[in-house]
Image (cartoon, helix red, strand yellow):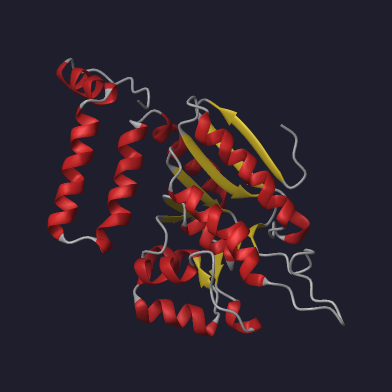
Length: 265
């Protein structure tokens, strides 16, 4: 597949999606969203893919929405664009797709992750950032509210006080502090980002994929459940996974004292 705004490749069970508008800090356009939807369809349907890595080309991860995109452009004498429609048509389905993808996801944040770019990273299961990277909710500077799940991810990850500070003041959060606050999994030296992501992706690609995704689903459901409801959900997942080929393989490998050979089924 050939794309204009992204790069995509698959090797050894690892799919890599690179936002590829480096001259615009990989900011989103309608055309980029369309290409991403095509790629996520491939990831969802290709059983050989066991993990997705999402990153950006050049010196940034993603600067959010490109305000010069035709869907967003403000033109003299013309009605203001319907930004809510852009969110509903592009960002809402993107976040829901990432949260419900059949494989685990890793965000490799190689530079600034701003606005929607920050939220797209946070929608991934694991977020690893270069120490020079930062996260920014800049919406208040242009009279908007954090979108793309920003008002959901931030309070859940760092608590209401810090979430409000980040959203209202629009200050950059350095990657190391983001890790310290629990917003992301890890901040690593810039020179180590690629090797760290490669190692994580390779590890996840040979693990029991369905169990990883059910773990994600259970974690996300917990804040909405009572303890009793969560216990019931866990029991249902354990029943399903207990009948899976990967569980049988895991037990056999444990008993035989060998490395398991999981298939993701």
